[in-house]
Image (cartoon, one colour):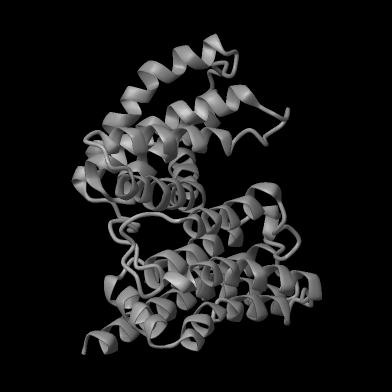
Length: 332
């Protein structure tokens, strides 16, 4: 019954997203009536299917069903992530964007973390091993380095698919194959998530703004911003930046460090280590190495990680993250 409910919920989620894609396509067509039909439809359908996978991992029943399949046989464990190729083909074939290099890069990105974690699929994720850290790296480095570029061509050049696929590939590998608990992967915040996120945002503002000025990293720009503009930017950052990054650095890395460090203050040590690594992951921004960006990101990571420690749910730290990034975007 649980497996049937999980499949049914996933199916309805995808159907709903496809319907939303149809509405979005109609709206876009009204704006640009001369544009070809097939690429528009293919893009929105592919995005809906990708979002369906992205959302489905928030359901513990879906994850348990995937986990059961992954432990039953290696072949099942390898076939399930390959379903992520369906949205790519749905987009690439009608839009005439299917390329050998794009397909192979996406295939490697999808399979790499699963292949690394397969030997540990029957064990409890009680502590991190070297394969776990390598799997985290193969999820993060291709995105940060731009290696996944050229696979999708979203309208306006907005990288919509890369963060979604990062979460889907990593979520399947760590939540289903590796059976990592307490990642807190959810999308919709609760009241206490918002409270914890807002409190940590306020804490970062008190410390981060003076630090940003001292490092000459920020400069205030006073201009009016409509509530609608801020809300749209905030939601985009929350879904496409905050959730993917917080899933990797807090839900997986910080979570695994807490399980692996044997000390009474393991939570604090895990928080600091994850925040430092988070800062180092931002050094690639120009001018390289951007040590100012790295320091500020590490400082922000302390507050993101603290929100995660408080709630053990990604919406709390993602809410802090999105508030910081949206505020920086509009006023700094």
